[in-house]
Length: 65
Image 1 (tube, rainbow, N blue to C red):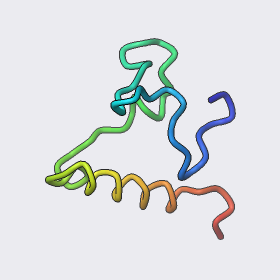
Image 2: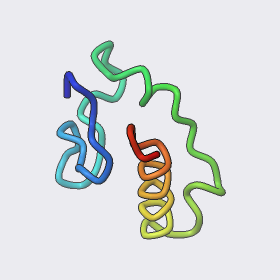
Image 3: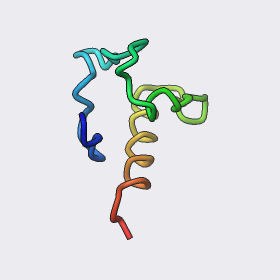
């Protein structure tokens, strides 16, 4: 995704089971490499983690002002 990934859009590099196709690759974006999941983000379920990521995307959307 050369122009970046818009908020709310599924990453083009995810497999059907939501794994990163670029994991361990030098092509993996720096922003992905810097993301450090932690218990607060991941919670106790996949649904919790997806809600957290959605909030993060909304909070970082360019031009949200």
